[in-house]
Amino acid sequence: MTTAHKSLVEESSRERWLPLLELAMREVFEIMLGAKLESSDAERPLPLECTAMVGLAGPLCGVFTFRCDAEAAALIAGKMLGAPAGASDEQALDAIGEVCNMIAGNFKSKVSGLSESCVLSAPTVVVGGDYRVHSLAGRSVAMVMLLEGSPVSAALELRR
Amino acid sequence: MNSIRALIVDDSSVMRKIVERSLRQAGLDLAEVLEAANGAEGLAVLGEHVVDLILCDINMPVMDGIEFVRSLRSVPNAKGVPVVMITTEGSESHVVQALSAGATGYIRKPFTYEQVKEHVVPVLGVRA
Image 1 (cartoon, one colour):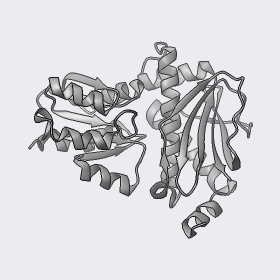
Image 2 (image 1 turned 135 degrees about the horizontal axis):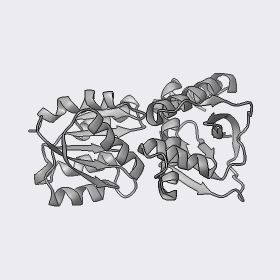
Image 3 (image 1 turned 180 degrees about the horizontal axis):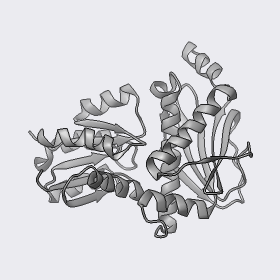
Image 4 (image 1 turned 120 degrees about the vertical axis):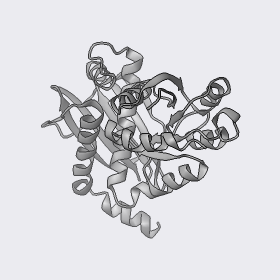
């Protein structure tokens, strides 16, 4: 394990990264959607049916996920497009992929050493709840918030 | 400012619409907006159209933004056209890589239309 890797792993404690993940989510929603996220009591990601994923590769490997239900995905797309009721299913999935991508990039830029050393993959979106993700996660941070009452969650799972 | 023709290259159709809206909010008079979903499609568009400005993502399938910028500098129609990268990758090394490849400017997502204005308007006068 390199010194830089050790430093990033030590830095990746839940207490340090959770506020940065929350800030990354809030900024993306405020800047790109013009929407304020509300805090939620739920701490862990909920079993929601739309999941966007962006891989993280480099000294730290893992996956960022963004999850919401279909209604929230349509709401997100509508806000991004400036057309509240006009987003198609395809645009809704495209939109949450981009939201996940931007949260991942924004989070990465806030963690010292992560922005330079790790790269992100293009987003992938999975629809449906009947699946299980096996990510060899060694540690994770997750945040659930509310968009106009609908839960939306973001998480980063790091491989062991 | 004269009307401009812009090409937006991004694999997300939603993001292409956001970039177009941001250009309009930034006060640009857009005569036409052309779209492409990756660098290869972007090169095909440039083979048939002359544009004044290109906005381009980096992480895309088929041909990424860096390769696209390198390639377009050999397209007669596009040699001197300003290219502004719009991407989630904001590290210094990515910026250096993009500028070395031939990009004119760099905007990190998430972005405001004010940032688009700040980065795009100055480069519109630099066509070689």
